View 1 (cartoon, rainbow, N blue to C red):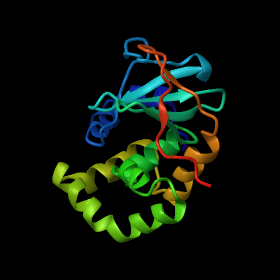
View 2: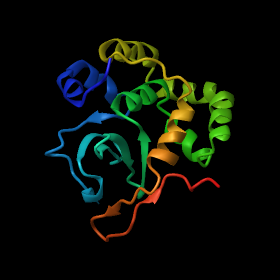
View 3: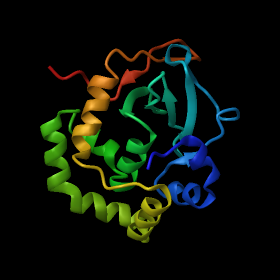
View 4: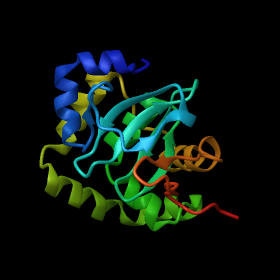
Length: 182
């Protein structure tokens, strides 16, 4: 099942559950925008994080962009469904991406070696995490992603290659979430 933004916005229960994964579905028309989205057209805000980060669908392919409040940006998923599968399966995906410096082998190793720690922390934040995962998968037709680190790596390094996003306030470019791998 393909997850559409319209279906997600219409599903009140899924929206409420996703807030526990730090993914608050937003109305594009009223969401604050602090970076220049012109080069990303078409552009539509999907969700925000409590820290002020913004998820948006960008370009004709509708890849998912994450622009962080720390001044970084990256394409993090090929589409909304892939993004939600990643967030639900691994709400700590950004920690893995940043700690591994974006290297695929390092990402896989970190996930394998530290998953118990990541999961324990996620369960501390939401003791009903396993139940919420199951509910979201049922409501939205999500599956546990196959090789999620490869998909994330591909999105950041290939789909987001050449991504240029600038802050509105000062025109400074947002930094990549990880440095380009040699």
